[in-house]
Each structure stands twice: as structure tokens, then as C-alpha cells.
Image (cartoon, rainbow, N blue to C red; front, side):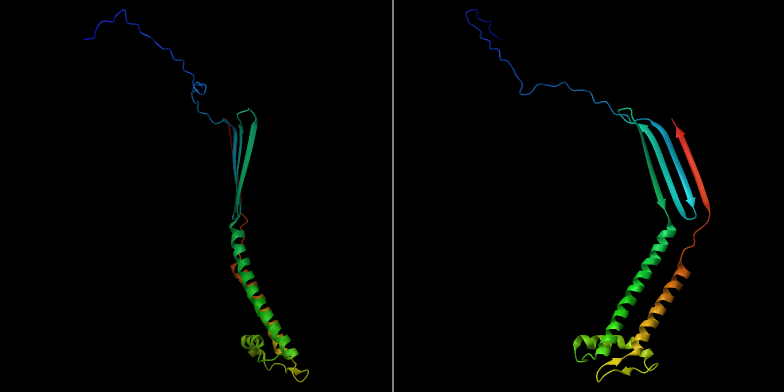
Amino acid sequence: MDAPLDPRRKVVREEVEYTPAQPVVPVQPVVPVEPAPVVDNQRSYSRMGDAQIESNRQGFYDANGNLVEREEQVFDDPYTRRYNGLDRTAQVIYFLLGILEILLALRFIFRLLGADTSNGFANFIFNFTSPFVAPFNGIFNDQALSKVGVLEISTLLAMAIYALIVWGIVKLMYLLFAPNRSTEEVHSTTRRRI
């Protein structure tokens, strides 16, 4: 049990003033932002053969009340995609032909100028290109220009024939594998206003 307060006893109360380090800002309730209503929504779809074009146009008001229009188009053409594959294959074939033509041209120049066959690089060129020139040896007689230089017509003939063969292969490849464009066209548009 508590003893009664003694009136002779003096009670001292201290008042402490509280000052926060930063002012207290009242918390504002978070209001969810609703998206601006769509004023106009237009969707169109077109098909020309295999190609497809899909357009989506939207108009809406932003937070400041300005009308904003947005348009998006997606274009897909499988014909072009397949044709690009053929082009890439033709480029690889022509690249390989270019390497062969350069090696045959080096062989022709080395034979014309009488390059030493004991040299490693010249020997490599002659050994690598000899299977490509062999089918054309004996069609024409190679002409000796000097004691060491030879005008090798079979190499020139090989260069021309291989270029024609590769050109024919690429043309045949396009003829057989090129996709056909369809002539069918479909256009469709849907518009919704709110």
C-alpha cells in the first residue's frame, strides 16, 4: 500500500520541450491512378499474299488533358524471309567461287612468270589447283613464252568454265527454290470509340 503524500515534501516537475529534427509531414493517402480512358481504338489487318500487316492506332487523353495518338505497325513477309535465305546461300557459293578464281589466277600468273616450284607458296598453289585444271589439260596446247614462262590456256579455260557452272547452279537454285508470291489480298479494319 502506498503511503500518502507528505505535504512537506516538494514535488518538482520538469517540463521538457520536444523538437523533432525534421518537421513532420502529414501522410497523404495514396490514390491509385486510373489509366486515361481510350478515346479511339482502331485495329486494322491487311494481308497481301503471304505478307501480313497489322496496325493498331490508339487515341487517349494524358494527365494534362492533351489528346495523344499512338500508332504501331507490324509487317511480316515470309516471302522476303525465304528469299533472304536463298540470297545468303548464293553469296556463300559465289564467295567460294571467288576463292577458287583467285587461286587459279595466281597459278596462271606464276606459270606465266616462271615461278620456282621449289618455293613453298608456289608449290602449294600448283598442288591445290592442279585437280581443278586437270580436266582442261590437253584441250589447247599451252604456249611456252620463254625458257621458263608458259601461257597456260587450260587455267584460263578452267576459270571461265567454273564461273559459268557456278552461275548456272545459282540460277537453277533460284528457279527451283524461290518462293512464289500469292496474289490474294485481305484488308480488315475494326474501330471502337468510347
